[in-house]
Image 1: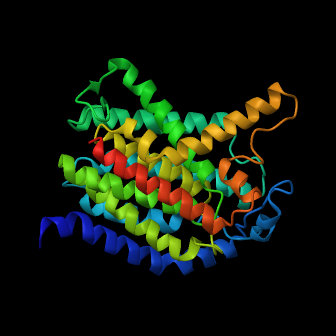
Image 2 (image 1 turned 135 degrees about the horizontal axis):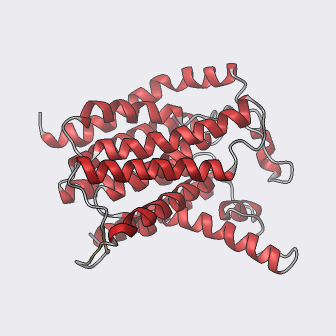
Length: 321
């Protein structure tokens, strides 16, 4: 069989069908656990109907990605590091979701517990990369031949990028289909980048994520039957960071994953301005996708516009290779 089919088309197809197949079973399991979403009273009125919708649905796309990763892991050096960050961050998200929606403790994990967990996972990723692969933690600068290597400081920089990306994907998960649609495009870009650089493991994992997210979207497009929760959004943050790093492309996240950054920045701006002005706001509501919803955009329009922006920025990122 052609290597392109094995590395790209097969992972997309297999992960898609696994996600579609297990989706109803996972949703039913979450319903039995009473793992329902609780919408904020002060949030959007249109979102109140989402209360009770099963969350932790990230399991639907994580299972096929992990299966593909295990299958290809022995022969592709980039796979295991990506799995470390994806599964590690996914476990942190799962614990947070479980405490909040199953144990009914609203706060979930404390902020310091999440940060500590993500730091430990990032260190494990760095140790594996440094000791068991020939992958470098240095970073290519888009549109140039420059490669940045911070030596010892590569690990703190890695943690900062991983934490920022995970927060971005977490904030992006606020509208049915938004985070999954944006990330499917980002993952497709990294699959193409993997072909470009000959990083077949990154190509395989990115292709698997594309297929898994498309399968998940069967159940998550508006009106969503399930939500990914922190289980899915943090895992996506780990995946994007991991697959970018194994190709020395973390700086590209700022371009291809601009929507993630925009969501985080909008929250920081809103909170900071609110405190400085003692109650005034820049946006109608943050993260910024809610600002547009408050302005009359439907959830579907938000998803379409943000995904289109991501497609254009991924094309720009490709030019930067």
